[in-house]
Length: 148
Image (cartoon, rainbow, N blue to C red):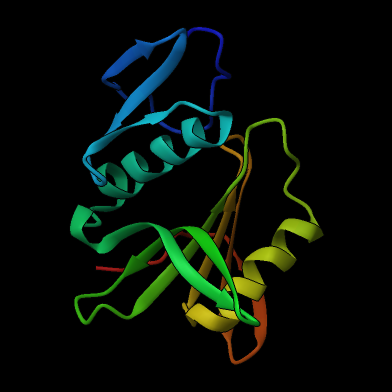
């Protein structure tokens, strides 16, 4: 894991194993080993950040949240749901070498048109952009919202 980039998240410990030369990490929320891709590296750090820094209960974090866009099955990387199971925050994770640009925002906002979360977070592990939604308008936020 030394070859993976340092991210702008607190360090985390991961349980890992090699299978036929590929590195897999244990995902405690999905309760299975996952191939450690550059995007998964960011997602694992993001999930730990939500749990450890913002006290979001792990049961309220859904990874690979199904989103139907015009009859096509898509998946949002992470959705934080409230105690009523309604989406509060949609998170789009990209690999550290992918720029967070208008294209990433458009993807997340397309997903969120279906999901209906109040907040959207875009991250590549190095840069993070948080938006609040009011109706169909988004505005950038500087402080992380109190979700729970």
